[in-house]
Every structure is written in C-alpha cells, then in structure tokens.
Length: 452
Image (cartoon, rainbow, N blue to C red; front, side, top):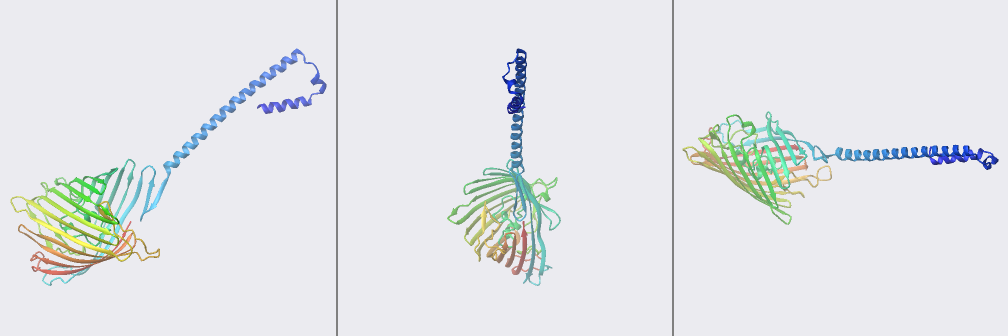
C-alpha cells in the first residue's frame, strides 16, 4: 500500500462516519489507538518505499546488463560477407576466411619441326595446365594463412604458409616464392603470355620451404629469406639450403608507374644433390620435348644467380624487361654461367590498364565488363625472349623467341588467351635425337581460365 492508497482509504472512512461522530470528543484510549494505528501505517509505508527502491535498483541493473550483453553480442557476432569471385567472411575480431582456386585449360600446336627430329609432339595437344584449390584468411593479432594445392597432375602443394604483419613488416613461414623475379612473382593468372619467360623455368624457379621477411618503406621494398627445397623434394637426405634477396624501387611519375629491381640467390646443394639440369619447353606447356637442354651437369655443389628487372605502366601501355644469370659451381671442373632474358610491350585496345602493386603485376580490374554494357578488356602484347645454355663446355643450345599474344578479359575472373611464337635454335645439334645445329619451330597456344 502506498501513501495515495492510504489517503484515499482515510477519506472514504471519514465520509462514511456521521457528522456528529467526527465532531464528538475523543477519549484518551481512542486517541492512543489512533496514534498506534498511524504508527503502524507509517512503518508499512516505509517498508513499501524500501521494497520499491530495491525493485527499481534491480530493474536498473538488469537493464544495464541487458544493454551491455546486447552491445557485446552485436560487436562480436557482426560478420560481413563480401564476394570476390568466391565468398569471403570477415568479422571485427580480425578473423577472415576465403576459398580460392583457378582452372586453366590449354591447347597448343607445334609445327615446322624438321622431319629429322624424333618427337611425337608435332601437331595438336591440350591439357589442364593448372587446377588449384585452397583457402586463405586472417587470424587476430596480425596473422594470416594460405594453403593451396594443384590437382592437375596428382596432388601438388603449391603455397602453404603462415604470415605475420606489423605495419610495413611482413614475415612468412612455410612454402612460398623466394623472390626470384618480377614475372615469376606475378601470378600465372596475370601474365602477358600463356607461359612466363623461358629463363624462369629453365633455371628452376619454384616455391620452397623457408622463412622470409618483407619490409616496405615508401617506394622501396626489401625482401629476403632462408630456404631449403620444394616440399615435394624434401626428404631425410636433402640438406640443401639457400639465401635469397630482392630489392625493388617503384616510384610514380604522375600517373606513370615505374619499377626497378634486382635479386640475388645462392644455394648450397648439400650432400644428396650432385647434379643440376637446365632446360625449357617451346613456349607452350602441352609440348614435352625440350629443344634446349643442358642435360645433367655433374659434380655440382652450388648454384648462384642474380637478375635485373624494369617495368613501366602508363595508361593503356606497359613494358617490362628482365635479365638473369645462373652459375653452377662444380668440383674440379669448369663452372658454367648461363643467361636468360626477355623484353615485352603491350597495349590495351580498350580503356583499361595493367595493374601493378607491391612489386608485382596484379589481376586486371575490367572497367567495362560484359554484362554491364561493355565488351571487357582487350590487350595485345609482343615479346622477345632469349635463353643461352652454352658455356664452359656445356652445349645446351640457345633459343630466340619472337612472340605475340592477344588477351580478352570479359569479366574480372575470366580470361581467354591466344599466343603465337617463332622459336629459333642454335648450337642445338643432337640435343633432341635427329636435331640439326640450327633450325626453327612455330607454336600456337590458347588458354581459357577462370579464377576465384
């Protein structure tokens, strides 16, 4: 009962009493009784006030707790899903997860091969060049991960690493690229031709298991690491180890992006590896015959290589060039040094531009994609490619490639490529059974790819 109720009850009782009763004098006993009753009513009111205050306090605390729980739940459970060729899940705590993959289907044709050469690769050929599936994402605290495998020929682990990023510093542990060259570090999804420059495969560039660090300071990128071997080649006896480093200077002049770089690599082959071999296919991977090949170089103990890079992107135009030298150190034998390099130029026939970021070429962002009123991006490229595998008594031949490509990218995730190459070989006698000293071949290649 509250004061209002007591007051209303008192008024009601008074109204029911006769007028003369109200005016009648009160005896001491009646006065004492009324006083006791008033005291009892006062105590009841005080008790009701105390209970009401307690209830209000509890309700306020409960409301505050509910609001705090709601706020915490909303902040922790807020998950954003973006679509980047595949769903990418992110939340405010720093977690993210995204499936990734690529499918590259190639077709090719090898022609003009001298009839004396023993090869079954003449004419049409095709293959699933790459079929990769994997995942990548971030972990709270600045950590990230990437795991990807190629399923085109069995199961081959490509990238498998954990990284940590703090400001401009990034550290990687696991299997990843060891900073070989501009084109090798650029994804095969984004190259100007179906295959990279000849020296990248000939000199054995591949991912390796190791630990590396990358630091960015303005226009300068410093990269370096310690690596063992590719994860598929590691075993108890393989104790090879190497050091790799790369420096990039990438200034911008207005809207023009420049790139200058250099890399150096040293590898101790260890006790288990005693020979190396350098060789290369004729532009297309669907052909297995290597018209340029050193064969096994025995008594090898170390590999040392270094390269230079340069590139420019200005509007629709781009150009890039690289050179690389590879030296083999042998026990009690001459040490050969081989050379490879390429130079290319390309132009978009549509209003698009090649994307460059972080010391490499990145995926194209189509300005007017198919399905949104445009025709996609159309790009034309030419390249001169040279590889020399002749030195110190090793006659592996030389290759000069004159190449052109046309690339149509209807939307960001899909590309179609057509390539042509005229490859001339010298010092090639006997490298392939029946091969003359000098000759040329023609190659055609095509690719359809989807990336997510």
